[in-house]
Length: 58
Image (cartoon, rainbow, N blue to C red; front, side, top):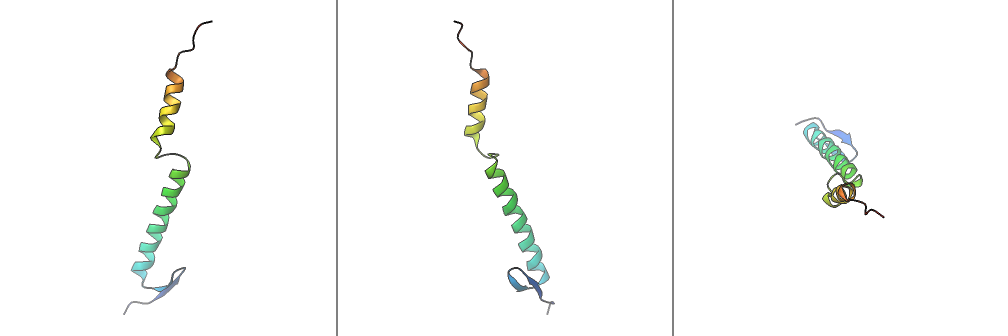
């Protein structure tokens, strides 16, 4: 039997601890990207339209 390691989710085998660490890292990166709008096409479109919009001459 593999030696059990105490992690923040309790006592687990080393393979599970590594898998949990990878999932935690992935979730953290995904949350950070969503917070900064990396997956929002709408925000990018708004900025692009604002740049391409011509100002009327007065």
